[in-house]
Length: 326
Image (cartoon, rainbow, N blue to C red; front, side):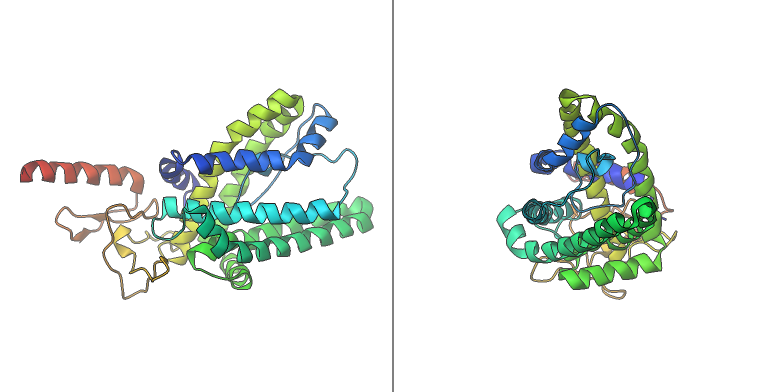
């Protein structure tokens, strides 16, 4: 089964120096200023929230936002919010995928927007439609509004891979949603990773939901501190989804090594099959568990372990080999 801590550890090393990836979650937090108004208006308090992975996480992904004045939907602001969030996601997901799995994403902002905005926007519209139905149901149900909570969790679970599948498998909105639902239905590694993520969000939300309600300075500090966590978790999910659809994870059996990436297509996305695995460069990445590469280029099998640690050992062996050549 996948280990979220190992994925976070490995992904963070690859994204920690990307200023744009670290800055965008802060931008997203600021743009959702209505949430800030709600927590400040509510005053001291706290709460807990539960959420599955998302293509673009911000501070609000880890906060239980109160609704002291009830729930209101302003049509223009609602539509603008969907467009802006889709645009940020269309930039963020390809960039983070490229950082953790080189050759599978896109770091250029313009190219990412032109290629991925439409399908990501389609997914955002589908989620927004579900949200509107739930709001209408809440208004109709009154005290029974809590019955909508399992539906929210079910939708979040079923679709959490969709934004990443748009990039990793170059799918349209409908295909990505369908593929994500299939993965969710299969359970296994997909369910295990989602469950670990859900638990992390719940644990983080306990202090975060309290801090943001202590005033504007505390809210600003929380927004900055949440950015690295949001980036690391999104990067970890990007790496996990890529490994999952590449068949590098199989419910407890060790995934394949870095060498098992297949040839890439003309559009920069790698293609793999059970029988066709080609060599990759030293900068290719793999899941946190897998094989290591022998010094002479052949593959030797290792027990499952921490891939990121073995990468360092491999680098040391390569350095010794270079010194010997000299």
